[in-house]
Image 1: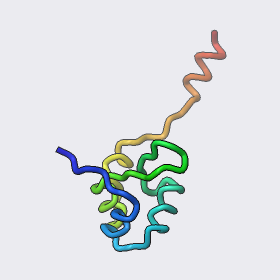
Image 2: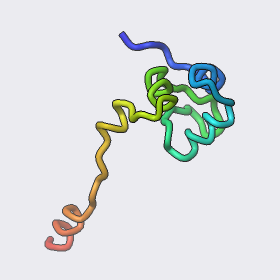
Image 3: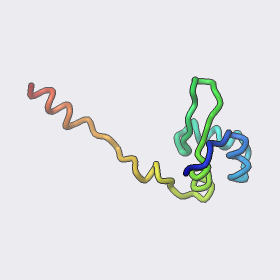
Length: 79
């Protein structure tokens, strides 16, 4: 079972930093979380916050691979 999501303030407490540091990391993509609306409350996974604080990649960063559109473009131009 996974832990419930945390807010920016809770994430800052977990990481031992200021909430604005967490927001900056979210904006740059260094740390990932979710917002329901553009200016809504951020929700983060505690495990991701802990890994970020330890300067290690979390499972989501390890699993994500860059996507290349070259194969799609080649198929489309061949049609």
